[in-house]
Length: 491
Image: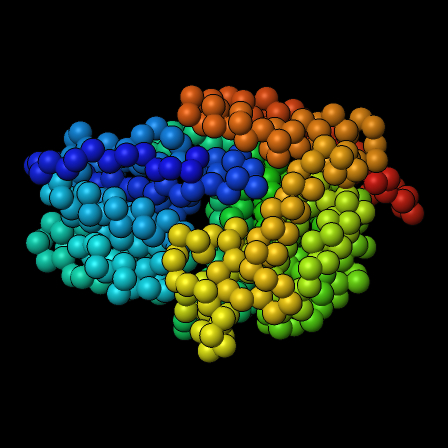
């Protein structure tokens, strides 16, 4: 999980015309976090690119993180598309150079192409900057006409007109669920540390028709879906409509939501009735000063606890995301945060060391203040400190990051955060132990292609339990003046 597969010595060959290979490069896994999260869902970017591929082309998919070795070269593809992100840019370049040595045409895209186009350009025959879905067919046509340009640009527009992802290219055994979904694009926040704030990028907030999203979810055949939207609740009226479309499917799903959706508790209940079992919430910090400095609009930190309870009262688990190393953080931030998470029984928490992504406002600020330690992108993975914090040393920040993961993944902390209802404890513990305490097992599970098989029984059990819970939730809601019991189904 730390070392990419070795690449054999390249031998120039004859590529097969009108064949394309899409690659998600290997990246080292954070030993503090769960290896399981890397096989939760497949990349939606590459399946979307596959969906935009002209029908006369044959397209294949290879994810190096499924631990199946080096990408295939037999048959040799004419075109290789590689997504390039900050933390695995070096590996993406190795793959690009390797395939070019074989005689393939290499196209590079992804977030890093948007923030560092000149660097990425040096390794590809062409790069796609911005929305790759409308760009990809143009690139393939130009390759056929022997008229490939060095750069292609596409803005994030006409999102609803994009073709649906082609999930047929995915190895079904490789992921907990193949149903990675997206209903909206963009976010109403523009936090200075977020990749959405890269350069002058302006991604207009767009929404797909709820019925279209529901039909796509249904077509996957998966009982569980993960919405990868930056914020599924940016438009609450739309979220209500989406919930109405999803409810009849009798599936379960999770999504990233901002905490202000709890301004309307009845909307949170609608989410539960539509199958939402968990939300990923970017709390970022328990300090209002940090939130304001980051440019994020958020409820006051003192209100976080009661807002978490809104989700819990409707059977929705909370995965809290926190950033460590803001300018108002001091060495006591780690213990204070761990205590708050345990007190409020967050089922899961994800931590990130503040990382100034290239060409974001935070990056420019760090450059101006001469606080960057280096520009080794492989360490810009939110698990390493790459800048000088205000009130602690880089070593203290990294040590605190590792400590809080150990604390929250410990048996004592898992037990402290268990549901109050005894019948909900066993499935919660099963999820926690598999997800948080089984990195040794995940290496075996991933390599031997049994990820989906291992998780499928738990997912089906969760779905059945949630359907029963939904029925009870609907009945209790229908009784005038009846106070809903805080029963949590627990995923």
